Image: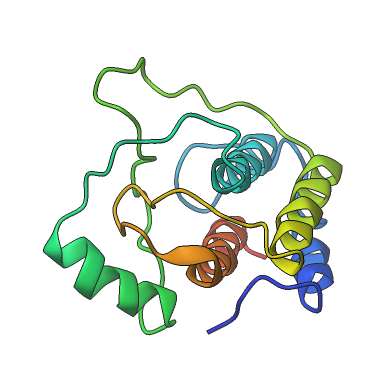
Length: 150
């Protein structure tokens, strides 16, 4: 299973570069710019720069789905809802840009290299630790790249 790393960052970015901000997905509703914002915000979550989402997982999400997804046995399903707090307002997708995504990836990788990457729990998978979060990001990127035909 791929892991987000300095050595494969350029592979992901070259695929992201093919997506225009106004691109329409093969499934789902977000534009290219909204997808950039979404994957950037997910990285920011792991940098502890957005509110922690309460854990809503269970035995199946932690011990069946997480290993299957994080080890590349299954791909992320289409049209999964973005985790959010039950008390929060409906999610508004914010737009992002490729350069911001690239810079945020660099920050995550720098924290990992320095031994300072201490992400919070995953809303459904629980405490997966830094290395599995990098697997998650790689699988998450691939999911959205496929969503836009890249």
